[in-house]
Length: 206
Image 1 (cartoon, rainbow, N blue to C red):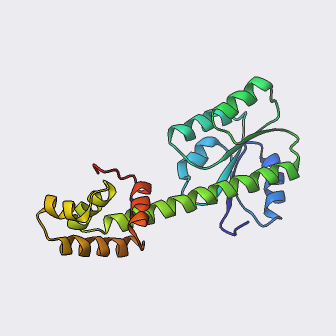
Image 2: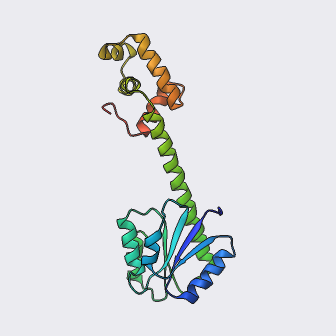
């Protein structure tokens, strides 16, 4: 696990929280403990590589209510719920609400660790995808207005001569804009340009 990975541990039972935090900490994970769901929500940074491990039955906001609130906020962090009084309907509700997993106390430490590792892998994969998407959109945004017009024509499958006619510019100018656009997008041919523009959400009428 990366040294930047964080486990947000939410449990009002201090003894149980300390025991779990000690186990996870001994494996090199950074654990941040919270005595309530409200305390977690007050300072949660969901841009970091992290997952949330929360007890279900707590004073104030319960773990299930926390899960609902995280969903409402579109928080992307994986959530694992733990309870000492679990039942099948509760587990089903938790999974339907977006929980990654549901454990009953006493928790099997290795099984929990396996799921935490998977949660952190999912978090990293999502963050990598988001970084790639931001980089892609930045490259597309770097095109000048005229390069974008030429790119739209290319995406629509129009020949360079037709693009030149529609834009009122010379064929050579169209070719120059297309070449410059491909350089900015980091592609070497028209097929690469089309694939990248489609990946960025463009269509012929963009």
